[in-house]
Image 1 (cartoon, one colour):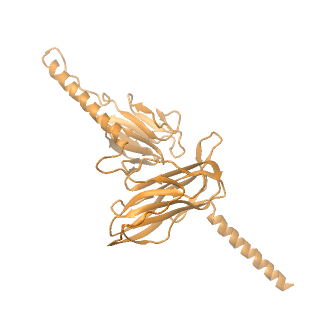
Image 2: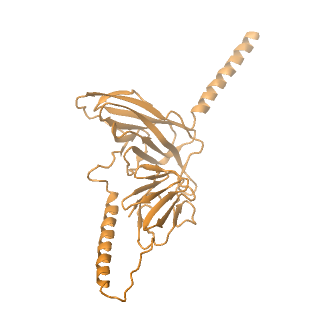
Image 3: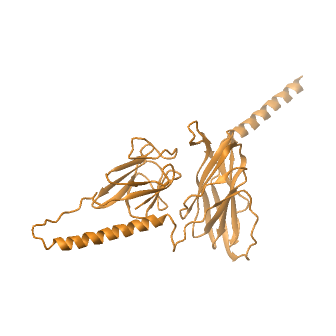
Length: 324
């Protein structure tokens, strides 16, 4: 009888241990790699993994990398029905997003992300952020609550020895391009900004010629333009207001999820009052109000920076606009 009781207690203890392990691994996202040593020119493959008790309809991830050491290529998801949603890429940060029309149970690989090594270096890949998504009752994407990020850093060592050209690998799943914009030609999202620069330049030239003509009239008084005399436009490239443009005719302008803002972004990753745009001394500024704000790849935390035509601003995970 004592032997049976001891065996029964051992079984209960084993069950509790397994249950605790399962509880720790549920609702989590983490990075893994098959190897961490490479030669120059080799392809680095890292896996984004997840375990969730909730069937999901999408996921997002951001991985920080050293552009002097690695070049991102693409990502693919082995989950049936998960389709990649191309996002504008910023140098030094890959931004991936996948979505499915039907709920999917995940317990393993979410995506494989590929990089190419550029030369000898020691570097890290860091999972900056990741989220699992479901469809809310209103039909919007909403993050799964309580998801934790496990292992988020992978240390890599790249040798200076160059490998021979590698044969193209067969790839499966929904492919998502992750290549950053070319340094010389510039990404397409800058085009509107460049056009805005030309428009401002033409307007300035027209204003200068008009000023020269009015100099001949002694009764005409010179007027000093106010800080808001210039007009600027936000061109929404990605997120809830994608495709729209907002003229900043009245400053300051509040941007956030609250409908009372001048520009409302119904995005779960944008806070109620996320950023403020204002003008001073004929210069436009953007102030971060406590959300995740990135300008041209640089994170801004509760501070103000000058806005210039062509600047790319990301609020939260995916709401992105070009200032012009």
